[in-house]
Image 1 (cartoon, one colour):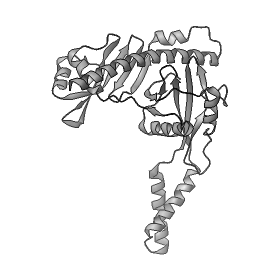
Image 2 (cartoon, one colour):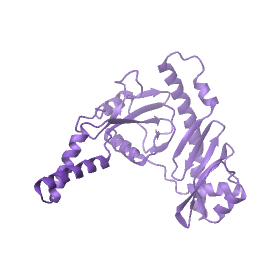
Image 3 (tube, one colour):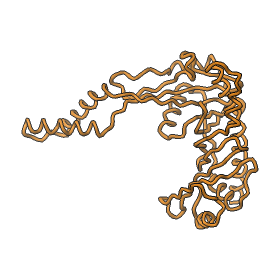
Length: 306
């Protein structure tokens, strides 16, 4: 349940729904398993396994929801190869070339035959509302899956408008950090980064276990390489990658954070989930509040100086 990736959205208005109202909206678009001929099914499910009917988990000003994606595993190459084999058989039997329409029809027949036998793969995308900050925090940065989540979120919450923070100067800000060695004291720049050559966008440099302030890395930046991602640690509590689009990836929580949720008092899985959720949300609340405030202020300064 500990979020490993974060895509942050801002609600344009305060969330007006209580848990019951949220449940009702999600139930309209609740998950239903794929039928034999369906390639994919998407819908809302319970956050925990303790109560499958409970689609909203609420605690201390945070409300968590979960979208389930079930999709059939059917590689296009399998359909193509079997269709080509069948087309060859028919052309040999009839001693003629099949038309484009006939070929398409055979491919469709093969597809619908195989999709009914295909295995299903499930993915869950968790997100929670931070009521105090009016945020929606999504544990996903994969573009395709994030698009699915947003689409189904808008179906369930047509009245709720969400927007991604509009911050355009993160690469410039990260460049300043690395060139001046001046950045917020609560953060530590680690030894990993991804740089993109401004003069050749196809040239991507992945820096691993190297001091980002050494001469070789500094010269790359001075020559026009722009940071697209840097690895940061916040207060020795959370290490993560800050990306150029304000997404946070590969979050790792320090032992002191994990141990505070595992204090030995919890006796059941449900109690442990409660403890994990509370510690995680409070930690991420403080982290993102500080990071977003600094980046927003610095971005405005960069725009004013431009």
